[in-house]
Image (cartoon, rainbow over all chains, first blue to last red; front, side, top):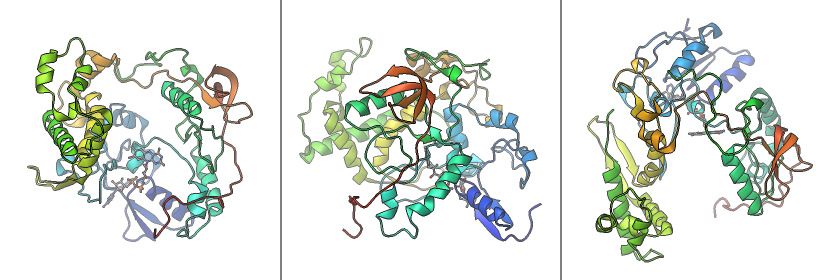
Length: 222
Length: 201
Ligand SMILES: Cc1cc2nc3c(=O)[nH]c(=O)nc-3n(C[C@H](O)[C@H](O)[C@H](O)COP(=O)(O)OP(=O)(O)OC[C@H]3O[C@@H](n4cnc5c(N)ncnc54)[C@H](O)[C@@H]3O)c2cc1C
């Protein structure tokens, strides 16, 4: 299934690699994407953390929602373990990284890369950070069509308000900041995140204090 | 993976940083053991015992504690644990762990496994809220596909952000609307922008 030659080989199927692969393939090139971490929800790799599984996947037929639900759970510590930045076989330890200064890099390994736990926030860059900094080879205006395309593909929309956001917005307003409703941010202020996580069903609306009202079937409970 | 007791070492590092802050004379407020006492709940250890045990970090004011954590950025650590892989960091990591470990470990489901040492596909997690200490303490009923927590979408008169009924008024004319609207495309003009960190400066 894997050939000996490709026009382009992309290392890492994280946030950026697959987008590059998509665009190159659209332009008619043959592309191979290499990913060292696990591919969850793919029948080629039924036990991605325990057994080597298949060699490659090139068909949507391989994707399984059932397998994904089983492997990719809402249990946080379990997922921190499964997505750790290293090979899918954890017995082999982490990748060694060296970075200057302080900080913890929460990078994930696997098909999806660090987007496997990102929060779906899709802001555009600040126009001034492109147009008023001389080192960019392009203008903000060149990027706007790209933003529009990806915002449409990812269905970017204002993030919903939960108890936490309500408190934040109240505080920001009380502190004298303006609510921004624009895509291109040129003034200080606050706004909901332009977010790509699908907005919740209106049935999930609650009035009053947060209590943990249950939603639908508790499939994960026994 | 097992139980790695890190509370002791982390406390020791924080105490070191608090002592260093005082040595450098960089503290803004005088240390006071009363600060440690104000954190006590009725069922906690007796005040005399806390007075006796309280370390330098707990006696610093809130701002000085933050300053002490800031000092840790300057300490280089080089550790080579048993597994042989190299772990290099500076002690600033400790400050992040103090925040991060509580979130991703203590409040996680970790304690609730029947048998944690098996391979991932063979582990059973009964999702029993009583089996996890932090879940008991916070009244968390266990993980679920979701909990109903939607209030609506932030909005303002004449703004396209929200739509439908106003569900709640917040400060000023900001409110939470029932339905979502969208952001609007706008012209941008950047010539008035002043770079806070000019290149080469
Ligand atoms: C907690 C968190 C929240 C975030 N939230 C947001 C957000 O809301 N919005 C946003 O825009 N950004 C967010 N980010 C940032 C965003 O997720 C990353 O910037 C983005 O995923 C980076 O994409 P990447 O393709 O460069 O790298 P990654 O997504 O990290 O992918 C790299 C991939 O390469 C693989 N790899 C590495 N070495 C090899 C090798 N030698 N051979 C084969 N494969 C290899 C890795 O396994 C990995 O899958 C967040 C990040 C974190 C940590």
